[in-house]
Image (tube, rainbow, N blue to C red; front, top):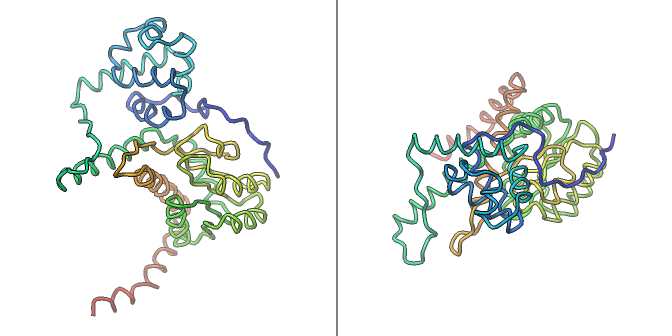
Length: 308
């Protein structure tokens, strides 16, 4: 079995519109891949949901210096069928913000920040990254990926750089519950292994940018060989998704001089990896639990010897 190559689309994956609480997370995740005019609309609705909820599509277009068509396109990219649905979500978000304390927005880390401020800012950014990823994660897509993994004959995971560390983390977890899993950081080895994949196998590409060629190429080969393919990416409209049966979106954090985006992107990727692992462990509990116990027991003597 082989797949037909999908067209890249900036729209949604066909699930239900995101809940109001997920709107801000959607904006942060998708805004970098939007046109500048669409970014103005997205930033306006995320920054002032109450004010924008009171505007007609014409009013929001005038406020942002864009067109009505741009407003509607932005609503659809954010996951809503039309502007009316986005407007309802804005009203819901505004109500939530009024009933609870809005989170403080931290500034970038400065060269002369006290270490206590650095800790506080980093902790906040990590919390925000995890919250945004959880809010925007499509649980239908996640469930489908878990189902494929639980039944997989073999799992190949592709990632380079910081994403390569996440790929290794996922394969180690899957190995400990009895799955056959391999992490491929070498692009040549990844492609030669992908050639051997077929139906019942799963290939997972982890790429924050969604455009890493060394990750896209083996996923394309796996896709064409008929394996079930999954993309874990911060760009749901990126090239990698053209060859993905299931797309799991991670949060896109702001990059600063002292904190490259790779740090926070890895945090969101690790959350998705943990969700995949726990989901598979649940589905395969009868075999996963004994496998985990056996792996703990196999390493127990090393921990005992370490404290002597």
